[in-house]
Length: 295
Image (cartoon, rainbow, N blue to C red; front, top):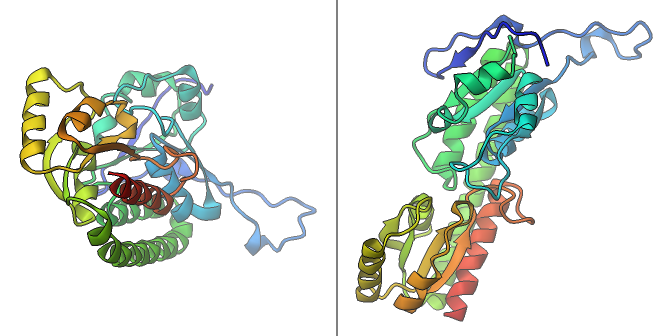
């Protein structure tokens, strides 16, 4: 690990001041066959708290960054306990990107233990759910802005990559919603859904109706369960959607209502075959359509 003397630069993304020591220009080798103008600089070492952020950073940062994430995609981000290997990742990083609600987990004690004097902290405050296109656009814009201020010589590259990524998000949204409009009416027995709070925006984005939600990261109490069952029966709920990363098992709720229960993933990598936002969206929708047909 690096010597102590921790100096943390906090990026709030509204009025931001960055340390100029985040990037270094490499010295061309004497025998380097590339022209000096084409000699590449060292990649920024970026660590993210989750795969939600790492997948976007890889797209926006491209060849200018190397990215690793800390919390495994199938684990509950609230219950996750920091491990020695996570501290090592932070000790070697140039940038650490996380959500503002994770500051308590990655607190001063954790960051100080990394003994990294040049680590730049990028704290993201996001209004929209990561799963919906608006959330994707929001995160992409803030990540592009942060990278551009840290590494100004590659600013154009970051903003061009962000623009390309957002275009792909718009195209995906159009494709998904166009197909759902045709498929859902003939497959789903009821548009009414009870879901984990973490999935509410995604369910609504697909045009379904959320009649009730529950905290996906806490066990449902008997009183809340009874209320959900009554509401589910009254509203003819056909689907109970859990959040895979919360670890909840609400089969009892679904069975009592007479609905189909299944897991949506909030994170890339939650399903082994879905390692991007688009793939995660496709996997969740596929589960919804399949569940509707089997109800």
